[in-house]
Length: 160
Image 1: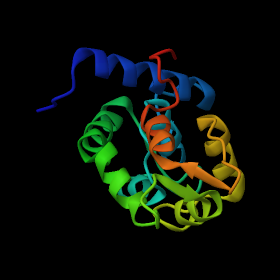
Image 2: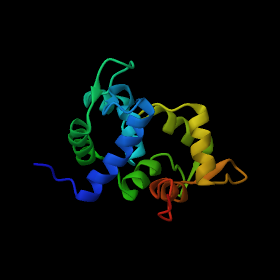
Image 3: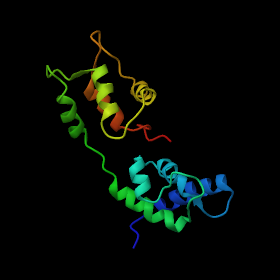
């Protein structure tokens, strides 16, 4: 039995209907767009997670009705593995040689680009610009502030 609330189901229905509209209003959404649909619902699935849950690499291979998307959404929401602020602080301390709360900007870029799901230089630049983090005169950034801004998400004040 589904653990989704009425509000969650309605939110999934609204996003599903938008994707269905873009696809031609045939009552289903192409499996190629499952990742985009989940991202519109506030999730951040990796490509591996998308494919694990039925996403395809090509348009036209498969499609889903709303009733088939709801269990995917529910399972993905249970899988959400979001580290805590303390987890990230501990990870960045590894690179803080002097224990002053700073990491070099270049080192942070390198670490973030090489761990987890790979991101491009342009994506990394966009993240840093969004977080509005400034380097000090030595090219270092205060990683605690960076973590706080990333963890607050794209809408820190709850505005969407």
